[in-house]
Length: 211
Ligand SMILES: Nc1nc2c(ncn2[C@@H]2O[C@H](COP(=O)(O)OP(=O)(O)O)[C@@H](O)[C@H]2O)c(=O)[nH]1
Ligand SMILES: [Mg+2]
Image 1 (cartoon, rainbow, N blue to C red):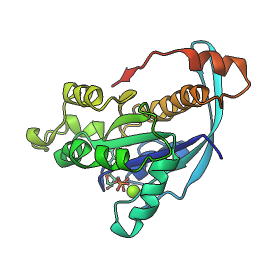
Image 2: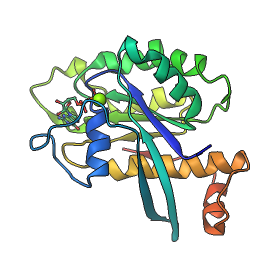
Image 3: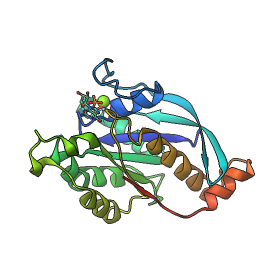
Image 4: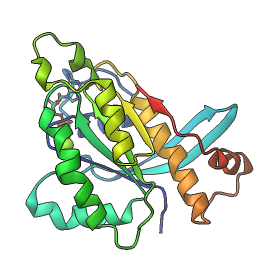
């Protein structure tokens, strides 16, 4: 089984597909110019970047998801199958998407990982970061950085990243964190790639907060 699978989950209309689309197409601020597909079909991307002077390269298999009861069965299977889950909320558009992380998504993830019980699998992602500075948005609807970091600790996330598909900020970092954490996870499970520099990186236990 391919062990490089990552899954994006979270409430609807918070920017999950936009993030994946922008990353895959290497674009920034395509929100106005491009029709973002409702669901990005599962796809692969060869990811290559340098971390601690070492080159990391692997083929990421990326799964988008859609909140529709018709697809619930598939979503449950994906939650169980994918090694890293990017659990998303919107920083500015919907406070409910933040509250739903604890009240809905965490339970759903934990219920559906029968074969994949390892706790260290969730990266918390705050999407639509640009909206934090949008004066037209009611302050009550905005999630601040401390709240995001506290939630990340509370749910035992391995990383917390805030990003924006509109400005392009931190888009790459979301996928780089997923790749690094996959390496750590695979190493623990004895599936580490032979490339020694990757194995060294997988030994690095630091978690990072990128905001
Ligand atoms: N301001 C802002 N809008 C965004 C951002 N990302 C997505 N959107 C908009 O949010 C809406 C929902 O995006 P979509 O990717 O379909 O959300 P999904 O249902 O979670 O996949 C669309 O109108 C996007 O144009 C962002 O980073 N900033
Ligand atoms: Mg979508």
